Length: 371
Ligand SMILES: Cc1cc2nc3c(=O)[nH]c(=O)nc-3n(C[C@H](O)[C@H](O)[C@H](O)COP(=O)(O)OP(=O)(O)OC[C@H]3O[C@@H](n4cnc5c(N)ncnc54)[C@H](O)[C@@H]3O)c2cc1C
Image (tube, rainbow, N blue to C red; front, side):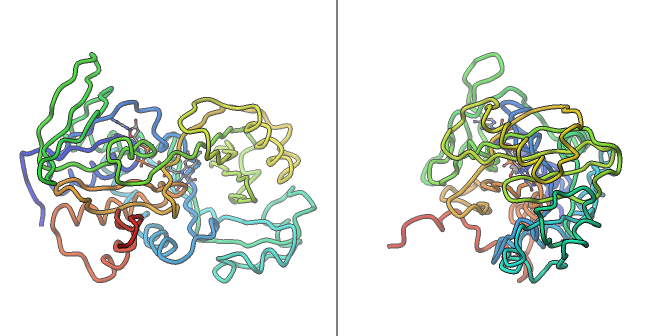
C-alpha cells in the first residue's frame, strides 16, 4: 500500500543509493528531500557499471544479495527509463574472467557457476587477448549499465518528474537525536549558513563519507582510479575481468579501464602516476592491441568500504535513521535490491521470508564486538 505523508523524509547524500531510494520512495507516494553536497564526487558517477556478482567471485550472503539484485535490475531500469525518458544502457553482455593457469580457474570461488573456457575458446570470446592467458570462465548473465553517462542522469530526471526535492551544495554537518530518536539535521547551505532541518526520518546514503555523520558504522574510503579509451565499435564484446584490471566495453566502442584499489590514502583526491601506470600495464597485459587506441578521459572516486566489504542495510540505533551504505565495489549491482528492500522497510510493507533472509546478514551492528 502506498504511504503518503507531508513530512519529508530526508536523504543524506545524492549519490547512487540516495537517488535510487528517492526514486522508489517517491513512487510509493512519500515526500522526499535529497540533500547533496557535491554531485560529481558521488561514486555513482565514477563506477564502471559492471553487474558482476559471479565474475567478482562473491560468495555467501553477498552473492545471494547480488544475484537477487541482478534478477531485479531489468524491471528496476525499465521503471527508471519510463519515468525519465532516458535509456540507461543496460546490457547482459557477459563477463569473461581470464586465468594464466587452468588450476587458478578451477579454484575461483564462483567457478561452479561459470562456463569453463580453454585457451581457444577464450580467444574466440576475446579476440586479441594476450597469449599468456590460458583459460577462462564465462559468466553469461553478468553484464553492465552505463551509470556515468546515463543511469545517474536518468535517476535524477525520474526523481524530478516525481517531485522529489533537491538541495544541492548542502553539506549535512550533524545528525540530531534525542533519546535515540531522530530529530533532524544541521546543514551548511550553499551560501555558507548553518541551519537546522527538523524531520522524523532520514536515510544515510553518504557513501564513503557515511562514518563522518554516524560514527557507529565502520565505513571507510577505498579510492579507485580509472581511464577510458576509444576502441573500434564492436572490437570488444564481453567485459574482461582480469586480476586487478578490467575492461568494460560500451556499445559505442568506449572502453572503461579500471580500477585501482587504494586503501590507505583516506580522501586524498586526484590521479597518481603509479595508479595510471598500473592501469596502462594491466590493459596491455590483457589486450595488447588496445595500446594504440586513443585515451579519452581519466577520473577517480571513493568506494564506501566496510570491514567485510558488504553493505549496511536497514535500521540503526537511532529510531527514524535508516542506513543504506557501505556497498564498496558492488553498489551499481546492488542499487536495485537496496532500493526495493529499504523502500518496503521504510513504508512498513511486509517483507517476504526471502526478503527478510536477504536483508538480515547486513545489519549495522554486526561489526560491534559481541558481549
Ligand atoms: C572506481 C570505482 C569503480 C566502481 N565500479 C563499480 C562497478 O563496476 N560495479 C558496481 O556495482 N559498483 C562499482 N563501484 C561501486 C559503486 O560506485 C558504489 O558502491 C556506489 O556508487 C555507492 O553509492 P552511494 O550512494 O553509497 O555513494 P556515492 O555514489 O558516493 O554517493 C554519496 C553521496 O553522498 C554525498 N555526501 C557525503 N557526505 C555528505 C554530507 N555530509 N552532506 C551531504 N552530502 C554528502 C556525496 O557528495 C555523494 O554525492 C565502483 C566504485 C568506484 C569508486
